[in-house]
Structures are given as structure tokens and as C-alpha cells.
Length: 219
Image (cartoon, rainbow, N blue to C red; front, side):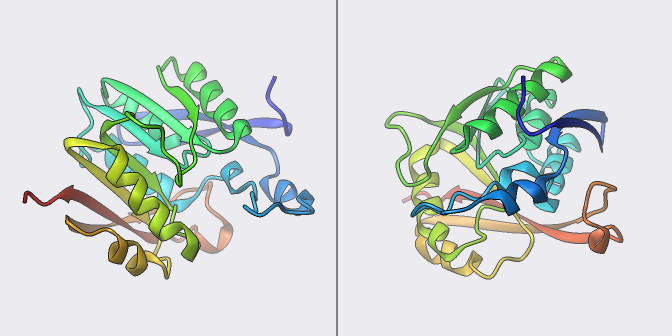
């Protein structure tokens, strides 16, 4: 049984829709948070964000190569990106988040879509030794300055030899600090226009999401 009065959204993607479980009122979860701990664990996981939609669309369209590869999603939230990767033929999909509730929603959505997505808790500051993936995926994880270096270090630890990372970002101010912390990687950038009825009303006319493809530079 999922907490927070779950509802189901239908998210249209290239190749067909996905069924996504989501708390009925994500804003109420944020409003209810009091006495934050040192990590300020606000429940941003509970909403559908433009960057997740953009990255999921790019995966579904074949612009992000995941077929036959092991994928790992950082800050998965509701797990839309991992669902798209699983349906696109990834060899394995691991959705990670530091919120157990987020992982429960992601697992339930995988079940509803008949997809195989594993879930696991993960702190960007301390990725488990030995955990590697061919493709590391992340949507809108650079929303605070303090995330820039931990995300960079997590990518260095988690991307397998010969693998790559894809970061979707809506234009957050801390992207430059992230790249400053990520030495020895080559990046290419593309822009994707995202429109969806699941975006806030002020964004439904569409917004541009930046997709960064990151690969280690051979020494």
C-alpha cells in the first residue's frame, strides 16, 4: 500500500504511454515538512519534473542509447526515467533515491507497466563500492550548490569503464560548478522542448530542457 493517497498519471512518450503512480498532492507533502534535519530532505521526489520528462522522452525516442546496457538512475524520484529505460530495452535498470517512499512509488509503477526495475537507496556522497553501470541517468539533480561536487564524484564512481552519463537539467545556476568539479570528462549538449499536461500551468506552453552526455576522456 503506497502512502500519500496515490493517483495514477498517464505519461505520453514516443512508443506509447507509461502509467506513473504519484501522490495526489505533492505540494502538500512539501508544506507538511517541519523541523528539517541537516540534509533538508524535502519530498521533491513526489512530482513530475520537466527534466525527467525530457530525459524519458529522449530515451524513448532512441536518442539516449540504453538498449542492452545496464542503467542506474540517480535521484530517481517517481522513477519515470528508469521506466523509460526498461521499456527501451536496457539490460538492467536500477532506480536509486535516498527516500524510501520514492523507491516504493517507482517499484509500483514498474509493476503496473510490467517492467523490471530494481530499486535501492543511495546517497550521492557515499555510493556503494563496486556499484557500476554502463549508463548513469539523472534528471534535475543540480538544484542546490551543495549537490554539484557530490554528483560529480558519484558519476566518477558509478560509471563503468567505457560507459557514459546523461544529465537532464532545466538551466539551474549550479551546472557550471558541477562541470568545474568533473575533471577529465567530455560533454556534449542538446536541447529538448518539453510539453506535458502534467507540468505546472505556467510551463504547459513548453520549456527547454538541456541534455548533457558525459564520457571520460582517454588518458
